[in-house]
Image (cartoon, rainbow, N blue to C red; front, side, top):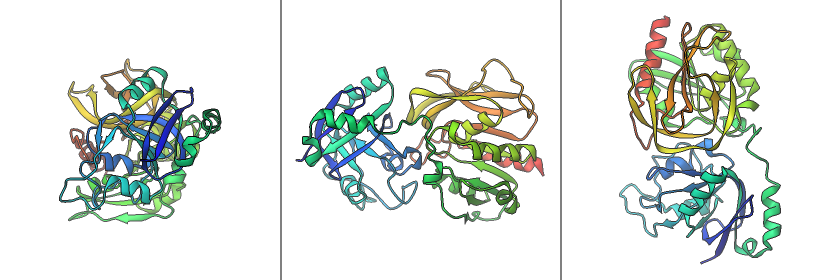
Length: 371
């Protein structure tokens, strides 16, 4: 086995063996608590420039297939696992996880005490990190730490344009077309337009640089903002576009990054979480019903909106509709007098759970009511 090490920006080192490509990579170290769905995690564009630590010890059991990817490539900057499966066991598997990582140049490390690493990140917060394998692993650790410290921080990072589609495309409705939606791709996952299409929605996916004229040219019944990577404080163009949408009272639905941008458009601030929410087992409460949903998350930033009652905004009162039961982080927003709402989590959750799928129906009801 080829030696490898993980160097954190605070100087702590974890040693192991190379997993995937040999070489070096840097990014923000974060942990994901999902016990399944690693293929969806790896191919989620929201993980751009992040070194993902899997808290579940056994990864790669079902290999990699041609159906479950959320995009056409792996987006994580690096991958950290404890005990990868040497042989996948699934009739759908086409390749091993190791082979896909190597083929796409993704540097990873195995044999790491991921429990200790996760506890460290929970106590100290998400931080910059580097994975070094092969010849790089033998370099002086002081030199490797300098490489990590030279890595740009996630705060202030504008990454949506880096993962967005370069050209608009259309995902046709399944069956009879009921609605048309303009979807801004900030790092959209393949399952999102699929979920809308299953409800009779023709989805026009637009680049992150799209203008209000591009949105209106779709003659859409509503506008959708997707998930995506980076700091929402850097997305001034998309916030200005969203305000144009709200000014026209077009029905709006946003998820994850889209939720943070709605918060900014309404005048709320955003902030970086200590270690974020990442995984498919995060409990969220719908405050209107008291119902608790187990949801999929991938975010390191959150909206700073008041939890105690509707707050005034330039577009009328807005209220927090959902909160995370672990830490009271804002997980949903709604305008009381205009057709706009958002959630911080991922209701399309390809790997599950599917408790929040009803939100796509709610968006369709919103468009139906606006007609």
